[in-house]
Image (cartoon, one colour):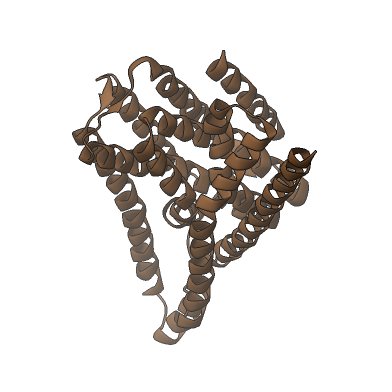
Length: 342
């Protein structure tokens, strides 16, 4: 009898803890969405989603996947990486498309420069596949992944610099007084920059603070309820890690179709970062500890990772996301889960 009550008290405590962290993540996601709504007045959606939000909402993934690689075999890290990619291009897309259709009453039309991100997504997936054919991710493999990530970030920043340069050329056609007025409308002032920076910094702190305890509460709650550890590793931990991105994307998509396109760019960008920056860091750090990141019989994790990324590429390349895409995105996780555990 005592054990029964003790177990129920522990279950209630873990449930309350999990709900608390979910609420905190939602608050941080609201800050991210509000900041993104401000930034889209001055910067294109793909720059905001790929360079800014892609990194911020990926912070939990960085901590979790690297920790998985350092504390256990690389298989757990690959499983978490696969789960994160699958959630972004399935549940993530579903939430964004449905939220946009319901609140903005239209299909989701995406900017043309998103195809640059999609090209990097395919290249990153192909690189992971090619490196996995060696049977393990070796020390040098990690640096190749990190180099691709650097190229991706450089591409985004350089593209924005070129856009700003063209904008300045157009402004030169106006008088100095007119240029001053136009700049005040299309470029943020110091007060606006400070406001956005404060909101994003707060969100970063919250995501960083909640990443480890949120995952810990999910794992303990699942164990108390009797879920097998394999499900926690491949499904529940990625779900916890992707929660900030999923919630932020949904909140953004409610605001406007343009904000929803930022959410899509964010998801594509964060998966490029997962397959380059995060995996690369995990491989390098694992190698420094004298352990190779072995693939072996778990190559199917890599194969599924490639399949998920190709699905994301195919669904997005025409630059229109409809309710039909939402349906396919919702059905896709069922197939992935079936393939993972059969």
